[in-house]
Amino acid sequence: MQALVRLALAGLAAAALGAFGASAQSEGEGSPEFPQATPFTPENLAAHMGWDGVQPFDDAFAPKNMLLLFPPDSFILSIDEPHYVPAAEAGFLDPGELVLAIAVGGDARAYPIRVMDWHESVNTEIAGAPVAITYCPLCRSGSALRRVVDGEPVEISVSGMLHNSQVVLFDRATLTLWEQTGRSLGGPRFGERLAAVPMAITTWEDWSRDHPESLVLSFDQDTDVDYANQDWNRRGNFGGESYAESEMVMPIVDGVDDRLHPKTIVYGFDFGEDGELVFTADAFRRDAGGEVAFGDARYAITLTDDGYAFAENPATGERTDAQNMYWFGWYARHPDAELVE
Image (cartoon, rainbow, N blue to C red; front, side, top):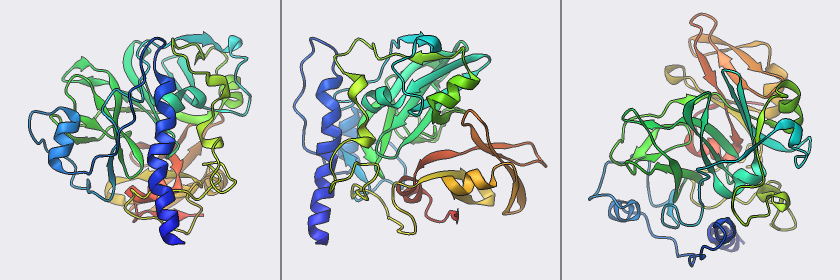
C-alpha cells in the first residue's frame, strides 16, 4: 500500500503542475512539451538556472527535497503587466473566496487565488514601489516582496523548481533563487534578502468591507485562461477528495508530521533566537487579542478584521508577520516549532 501511495505522490508532481502549464500561455503562443523532472545535483541546478558554473546555494537543498521540473519562465508565467478593476466592478468574485490582499499607504489591492493559482507571481507597483505578489498553490502560501536587487527593480518569476513542495522563485536580472519569505536560496546574490511587505490571505468579503477602494486583479490578463472556472485546491480527485481535503503530499519534503492533517491551515512565526511557534487557525483565532509567553519574551497576538495576522513584542515594538499556509509546508521547514492547538 505504501509503495502505491508513493507512486501516486510522485506522479502528482507532473500531473498537478503540468495542469498549470499550457493554458497559462498567452494566446498565439505554443505549449512546450512538459519535461521529465531532473535529479538534483549542484551541476544540474546550475544548468537549470543558466548560471555561469556552480553557485552557492542553501545547504538544506538535497535530492530528497528538491525537484527540478521545468525551465524558468516556461510552464508557469508570471504576470508582468497586471490589469486591475475597482472593487465595485469585481462582481466576478464570490464573497467567501480567498484573495491575497495588501494595503500600503492607502493603496489597497486584492489578488484572487483563482488567478494566482496559474501564475504564482505578479510583478506590480504598490504605493509607487516595486512589489512582487507570490503564491504557492501546493502549500497555500503567499507573500509580498520588495522586488529590488542592487538598488534596481527586478522581475520575480517561477524557477520551475520545488523545495519541500514549495515554489522556488527567481529574479530575471541576476538569476538568484528566492524563497517566498524573501530569503535567497542560491545563486549570485546568495545570502541576501528581499524585504517582505505585510500581506493577508483573507476572504473577498472581509477585505472589500474594510477596503472598498481596493483595486482587484481582474480575470482579463491577456491570456486564454478561463479563471472563472479555476480553483486548483478545490478541484481534482484524490481518492474522491479535492487536493485541499486530501492527505496527498508530494514526496519531496524533509518530513511529515501526523499530529495534524497535512492541509490544516496554520499561522507560523519565526521569532529568531526566541524560536518558532505555530498555531492552528482555530487556536490563532482563539488566542488573538491576547498575549503568549514564548522564549524570553511575551508577544501580543493580532488577527485584524481584514485578515492581517502578526505578533508584536510590546517591550521592543518589533512585529513578526505570520506565515499562513498548510501544516505540511510549514513543518517541512520548521520541524522544531512549538505547536499550539
